[in-house]
Structures are given as structure tokens and as C-alpha cells.
Image (tube, rainbow, N blue to C red; front, side, top):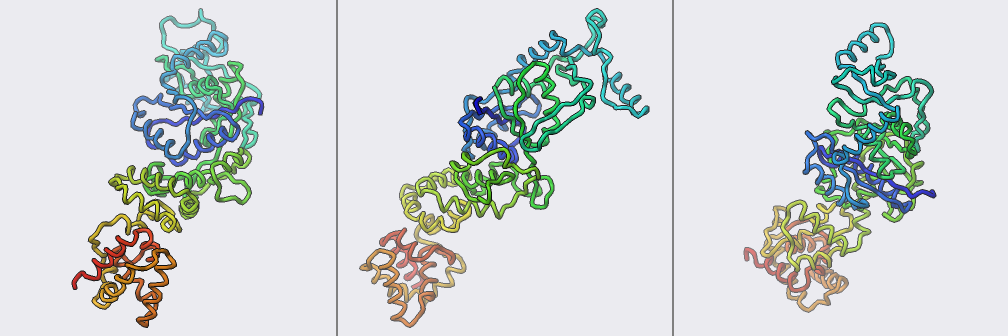
Amino acid sequence: MSQQVVTRFAPSPTGYLHIGGARTALFNWLFARGHGGKFLLRIEDTDRARSTPEATQAILDGLAWLGLDHDGDAVSQFERAERHREVALQLLANGRAYKCFSTQDEIETFRDTARTEGRSTLFCSPWRDTTPDQHPEGAAYVIRIKAPRDGVTVIRDEVQGDITIRNDQLDDMVLLRGDGTPVYMLAVAVDDHDMGVTHVIRGDDHLNNAARQMLIYHAMDWPVPAYAHIPLIHGPDGKKLSKRHGALGVEEYQKMGYPSSGMRNYLARLGWSHGDDEFFTDAQAKEWFDLPGIGKSPARLDFKKLENLCGQHIAAMDDAALLHELREFMAVTGQPPLSEKKLTLLERGMYCLKERAKTYLELIDKAEFIMCDRPLEPDEKAAAQLDSVSRGILMELTPQLQTANWTRDGIEALATQFADAHGMKFGKLAGPLRAALAGRSATPSVFDMMLVLGREESIARLTDAACNGA
């Protein structure tokens, strides 16, 4: 591609960043970054009644969490209304648009008659070919574009293929309303042109809009961008994604503890494929992503696949980076910040915590032995492991740990030797150790916990448990 690739993401700030919108943003970001181009952000805030600063911030926060950085400042569509009007007036001056004085009642009457006579209800304005001297003085009007009456418009779509629309199916679309405000179709076409957008990658619910926006491109003699209309995301049941399927907003996925790298990987695979590759890095995604790889059928949200990929990303992540993300997750979910001591223990324990953890919630749950403080309050199952016999065993084992070689092999050898000497299997010893070290029965390996906690803390916890009730 000789021309620099420019893509854009253009959400309406009327609510959270929808998971479908997040995937659209990701596809635009991957395509731009993979081609050394620009990824731009435009906030389509022309619906003043529903657009809120909070929703705009939610979109920005969602993109930031997903790591989808945009080039330059975000563009406000509302603030560009004067430029949109300027283009409409230019088309009027060039004879590519006209003033239409038809009232709403007249338009409805036209459509009712057309229905009765079995004709197309597409409004044909009687003002299309009139001259200014025929216009009623002081009457209200809208500005309409002169759509071609014959021939066809072909949308060359990189995903859907060529879509042909007969021009007699396109009406003379309103560009400026009676109060002088520009319509959405005009605003989008002007903004995309002015921002230098070369590729419009968006949901296929916008497919019909392309033909109408192309009217403006052709009337202004502007180059038409490449289009790629991507199928929407459906729920696991194959129906359009809605609240009944669970989380919809990106921030909900963040609060459920999915890592952003896993989310990017999963969303990239949701409707796009590169051979049989499932797990891949950002660098690979940027290198591989292409428009022909996008499927024509709606993709289905699959939480098991999402969790599986997220688990792989957590396992593959650098420990320091994982700790950083974990702290961000805890802040977002309103958990108190950790002390430096606990942060050190967490980083030390990452090697055993991140195995098989599919979310940050699961990882924090596995790290409960680090998060808790002495004296531990064992849960019901753990308390059952600490009967008088078990406490006696711990009381006998603890002094021997004072002089043990504090490596995994050293601790394991001592514990195995101790179990053998007492004619028991190690499993019999593991239950009380878990209960004493973590206050619960489901934990990482007791040897891993002791290594992470260190000799002093481990012995202190074992002593607490052995002496409790003594």
C-alpha cells in the first residue's frame, strides 16, 4: 500500500464501551499498527440528549485498559458541525444538492398515495429541479443531496465482497435539517474524509449506510475509502448479544479479572482467524491481521475459550508485569493497596500462583496465604484438619524446620522423612500443613507456600496452629 493506512474508531458516548465496539476498535488498531499507519478516535457525540461526559470517559478508560492507543487527540463530531454545514452548502452551490420545501405532511401524503398505488414509497421531492426564483420566500426548508436516479452503486467491501445497490433504491437524503443542523450521514462522511481515513472497518449493521455516505463522496469528488463491514458478535446461543448473555461492557470484563492481553487475543480471534493459531502475542497479531481473514458469519462469544486464552496469557506473562496488572486490577475493583512486604511475597510467589489461574480473581484467591495475616482464622474445612493429633504432629515437626535446608528439595525431603518416621503417607501431613499455613484446604503446594513465606513466617504460622487450643 503506497498510501499511509488511516483507520478510525467512532463510538457514540451514550453508554459503556460495548464488547462489540471493543472488537471493532481492536481490528482498526491492529490493521493500522500492522501497516505502520494511524489509528484515530472520533467521539460521535451529536446526540446531545444522550451523549454524556461519563460515557465518553468510560470509552476512553476501556480503550486504555485494552491497550488500544490512538494517534492524536480524540475528535468531537459535535464540535465539527460548522464544517459539516459548510460541505452541505458547497454541494448546494455546486448544484449537487437542493433546497426542499416539502412539509412533513406533504411527505406522508406522498407515501400514503404511493402505498395505495403500489409504487415505491421513496420520497421524490418536487423541488429537486426548481430554480431559486420558484422558491417560496421565508418558508422552512431542508437541504437534500441529488442522488442518481439510474444505474447502480457498488460497495466494494473487503469482507462482504461487492454489494450492488440500484440507485432507484436511494432517496435524496437530507443533509441539513430545517434548523440547519447536519445529519449523521453527512457528519460521518465529512469527518472520515477530513481525517484522511483510508479504511472504514466497522460493524455490518452500517453496511447500508455506506451507499448513502458514498453519495456524498461522489458528489464532492472525494476518493472513497476501502470498506470492511464485520459481522456482529452473537451470544453462545447464536442470538444477538444482549444482557441475558452476561457481561457487555469492557469494564465488566476488567472487573472479572481477565488480563487485557488475553482479552485482545480472544477478541482478535472472534471473527478473524490466522490458520489454526489460537494463542498469539500482540506482535504476532499486528503482523498477521488482515481483512480477508475476517469471516462473513457472526462470531459467537465463548467464555470457556476466553478463560482458556486468558489463563495462557497469565502463565506466559513476565512476573513484574503481572504484578503491575494485578495492582491495577485491585485498584479498579476497590481493594485496598498491598504493603511492600506483601508485594514482595506476591512477586516471589508468581511462579506457583500463575499456573492454571484463568483470571486475576483466581490468582488472588490462590494467593490468599500471602494476603492473610497472623493469627489466621481457619475456615471450616481447614479447622477440621487441625485436631489434637494434627496439632501434636505440627508441634513435633516445627522445631526440625528451624534447621532445614530452606529449598524446595530440602523442605520436601524433611517432610517426607518425617512422614515415613511416623508411618504415614505425606498426604496425611499435607492437610494440617495447608490449614496452618493458609487457613484453608485448597492452596498451592505446601512446599511452595513455605518457600514464598520464608522460614520465619512459616514457622510462626505452624507454631500458632500447633499451640491453638493446646
